[in-house]
Image 1 (cartoon, rainbow, N blue to C red):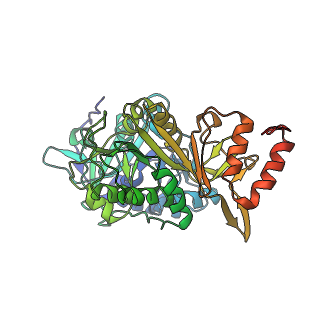
Image 2 (cartoon, one colour; image 1 turned 90 degrees about the vertical axis):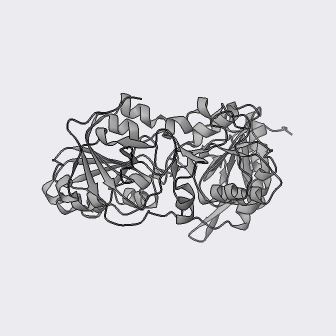
Image 3 (spheres, rainbow, N blue to C red; image 1 turned 90 degrees about the horizontal axis):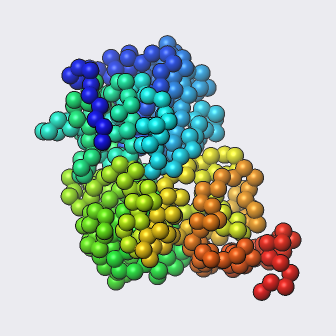
Length: 444
């Protein structure tokens, strides 16, 4: 890995002095998730009226960004997100935040090959340790690649961050230009949605397909967390974890004794993730825990890495799937609601693994403005983004059943997906499938 060398020894300055380094027209990078700076952001917001043409790249914002709040009409700041949180989504709806389409595991390569150098990167990290490193905590991701291409590196120290283990979990002081104190806030938390009965029904179907020694990737949401709860109560043993996001549910599974990583081929004995987001319970479990390692996202998410572990199991959510098996997991029409993230890469990596399995799960229906609609549809909502193509789809799961689309023709897929739709919509789905010739007359 290429190491940046700062032009001069790192200086400790105030957040206001750091903000004064920003000039009109600059590209800034705020890093991702737990690494997004707060003190620097607040200081920069105070002088936003003096700046123009500022462009900021970020990902999964867990706290309001002061520069965005200070510029509600986006006259000074162009805010770009690589994956939306609820906050980013709301700002997108108001025309301020904009999405950059990515497969999360490819982002380090984007920075090294395609994205212009960053003028200023400000990243929150643990205070410098005895070896001169600022630990990235539960946010490894692509930060090394950003630092390689940055003209100016600012580290905002935050003692509240958990110290993460792993070989590439920090930046050395020799690579840093400026160090600023944090604002004393705790670590931002991401509430865990409570599992519903639908979540538990889906989880039961998935859990029944998991075998001893499986290596799990578990996404965010009530359904994946319900799977963790069921596995924790099961007789399964020697599970491994190789995932993108570390969640409270995975820590529950770890605490239950089901996770040993003993049968992993890649990083045996270790829980491996690239970032964490959850409650203080999660952050406490991470802190200097030798069983948990954080790696760059191109280590965790690229399919050729994922497939190195046998029996890889990927469990992810979608919001809509059509009768040919296209999963739209990130948008509502032209409205971006989250991002591609690592879903497609884990779908592909798990399938390529020896005896691997990929599960895409969803509730059969949703309700909006008092109207109930099917999530399984003849055709996707106009403008909806296909996150996982029909060619990649393996298991699809609702509370009404599970089907495997691998090896199935279009008519067979349509029939299979109708069988796990809500009973109230099956007749209508079948009629529309016949009318569209997805299911030919006489097909059985």
